[in-house]
Length: 140
Length: 140
Length: 140
Image (cartoon, rainbow over all chains, first blue to last red; front, side):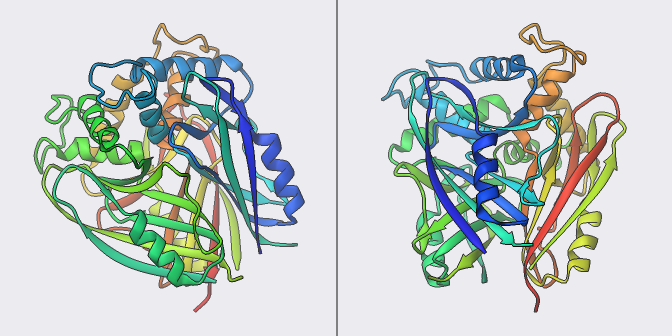
C-alpha cells in the first residue's frame, strides 16, 4: 500500500526546523506497519537532513560551517538574481540533499536515539516550503 | 507494481545534463499513478542532482564551486591512476550522490516549479553513463 | 513484498568498511527479484556511501580530503562535548548521507563494476553501528 500526503512548512530564514514529530504522526495515520517513508522538498534552496537532536549547538555549528564553506556573495558566482544568498542556497541544497528515505518498523519511523529529521532553510529570508511524504509498505 | 528500466546517457565532459524529460516519459509509460521513482547511476565519478532549472548560470556556478572545493591535481591525492580529475570525481560523486528518489503523483514525477533532475559528469572527458530507473506504486 | 532486517557493524575508528557482501546476502535471502534495497544507519556520526571498490587509496584519499575540509578541533565549533572529532563527524555524516537506495535486479543489488557500498565511520574511536536493510519489490 502507498499513502501520499502533502504539507507546507513556513520558515523564518536560514536554519533548521525539526519535522520528526510531523512525520511520525503521518506514518502512524498511514497504517503502514513495515516499510519505508520518503520525504521530498519541492525546492532547490532548502534541504532535508538527519541531524543530532539533543544539543541545539550542533545545528548552529552546522549552519555556521556551511556559511563559511559556501560564502554568501562569493565573487565566483554569476547567478546573483535574488541576492548574495541565492547561489549559496542552491549549492547547500545539493550538498545536503532534498530527499530522504527512512525505515518504518512497528508502525513508526525507526530513527536512532539521537537522530532527528530537520528541514534546513538555506535562504536568509523566510519561505513557504512544500514537502511530500510518501509512505509505503505492508499493514500488520 | 514495480517497473524497472535501464538507459545510457553519453556525456561530453564535466558539467550537467538535464534528464527530467527522459524520466517523465518513463514514469508516464510505467502506468504508476501514485508512488515513487528511483534513479540510480552505476558509476562513482558522476552524480544525480536536483538543481534549479531556469538559469543555466546556476549549473555553471555549481560546477565552478565544486572545481574550487575539490581541486584537480591536489597534492593530497595518492589515487591519480586516471589523471588529475580522477580522485576529485570520486569525491564530488560522494558529496552530491548517485541515487535520487522522487515522488510520483497523478502519473508523473511531482517536481517543484524550479526543480530539474541533472546527471552531473565529474570527469573532464566524456563517458557513457548507465542509469537504472525503478518506478513503483499503485495504478489509479 | 517487504523484507526488513537489522544488523550491527563494529567499527575501529575513522575510515570505511565494505558492506556490499553483507547486503548482497540479505537481498538474495529476501527472495525479491526486481525492486529496491534501502540501507539506513541509525546514527548521525557515520554514513553510507557508494565508492570505487578497486584501489584502497581512493578511500584513504577520501578520508584525508574530508579531514582537511572539516577539521577536527576547529575553533568555529561550540559543540565539543565528546571531543574535537564530535562536531566534524556530524557534518561529515550530513554531507555524505546516512541512507542509500540501490536497485535490485535478477535477485541481487545491481551495482556498477567499480561500485562498492561502504559504512564510513567519522569518529576517531570505534563504535557499534546499527543498520536497517529494507528490501521491497516483486518475486519473479
